[in-house]
Image 1 (cartoon, rainbow, N blue to C red):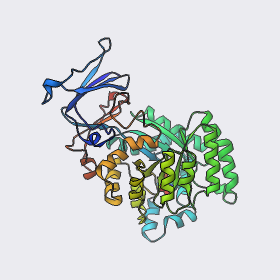
Image 2: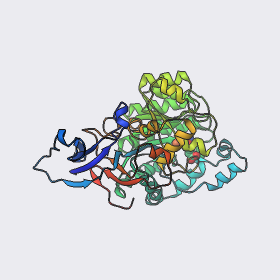
Image 3: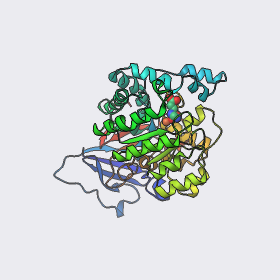
Length: 416
Ligand code: NIG
Ligand code: FE
């Protein structure tokens, strides 16, 4: 799609402080879904110095006047469990009556309650159920979403979830990446033999998902109520063997060393990381792994252990921020709400929050060369906002800040 966006005050999210400062009005030329030039608009104080926007005269371009609105990269939600069936409001009530998340999981609720509902659902039903949640994310300016499996826990049900996730691209203008999270919980039928379930994951589920092109990455819930280090390592090794990227749910409820292990395997990101220590942070620095903060889950579980923000800053670890949208620990379909929570609960700055859902989120899904910045050569996935300053995105929740999304160089004119 070829498009000229006129009069855009660009917040490019390029490296350095300039990347967070809105520019003078600029024109962005987009060809075949990619940004090919960015130049000053023919108005305003820079008129005398400007270079005119140059376009290829053999091509047709649509034009869209941003009327000096702020334009950022489209937001990227780099960690979601968007596809699932059922509802766990009852567990929310249980927790408020004093039962812990871990105890609910041990009693067969939690993730396994969603597994039962998801196994019973058809692929098309999973798509239908995901759409309202997806629409919530789109209204918060999201143009790319990572979606995990992990509520199927059989070969067929995991692949069904991944197909449903990919099918969302046929229903909305959105870029989906998929992550196989077969190692999310031990399924009931393997309760007494978790290692045999890991055999199934490594020998059947990962190879099939890779062969059918259904997964971009593999994730593991490395935790006392998930999988231990040895089991986690087997899954990472199988993922690597099949050419899939690696991610981890690590250090969420305790310090197991899963983040350092993930880093050893060159993981794109480690996620949650409330209990990460300095040795783990150093391991991330060495491997170039991003840390994804999930303030929605921290808030919803009323956790008190904060992720080590100061250490992550000290070692220059890219901090991504995501919704973790799921029925048990983070039922929130709004990425700007997560920016706000990250600032209020974890003390990130609004600039860090915006980097967390743009360039750093792109790193967490292995797309840092293509997405998350407004630069020549990057995908034309953008968000146009009714705001004065980028900090407004972290500051005020519930006001419809989004004016339009642009996905792959096309302005989305739907109501979302
Ligand atoms: O990211 N930590 C494990 N998995 C999800 C929770 C999933 C659930 O409770 O359904 C999470 O928080
Ligand atoms: Fe998660």
